Length: 230
Image (cartoon, rainbow, N blue to C red; front, top):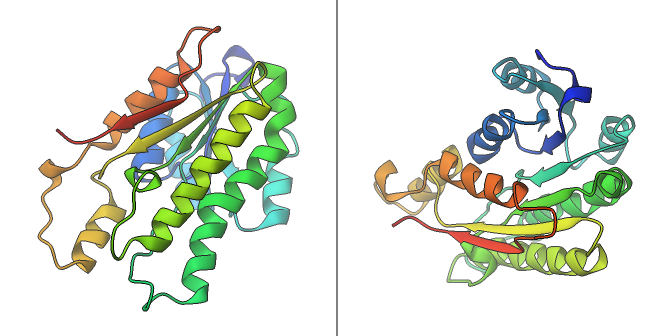
């Protein structure tokens, strides 16, 4: 960290140690002081060291007490980016109750809980909430029911929050297509497909859409963005 948070607007990015989240941290760190969110302290600190202005936000989003402690000293927040998420794909006949609960808790419940805790800080700043959703938040296919259910629910959450906070906090839903990340490699392998990174979006391309939403002029709110590979 080389810049005091007082000198810059503040952005918190969950899932900030890898993939899309890490690319978003790098993008926002050009203009913001970034709170890098993650559950592994060593990984978080390694990501912080790469950025011009950053601090660690170490908490497992499923640990209510850890999240409460991590949020305790945040009294102003200009941007909250929900990038942490998991994907467990499988047909309905294959997935267990635990599979369903895990995805819903990480992809929806944890998002709602963290947002609730930070709404006063976001309101104070006239801030922006950005939820990284998915193309699966608009359509579902065989083997994708539980993941899509969590992303449909996330879209419902952000739609409601947007209207509840209209005029106080901007709420943006971003729906990327397939992105070149470790998660995508695992998903393609599980489906028995050869992996070609060139068929997917770069994480930096998704980060650019976050930048577009964050930099919208004060009277404007970009409510939803979809970005897909060409």
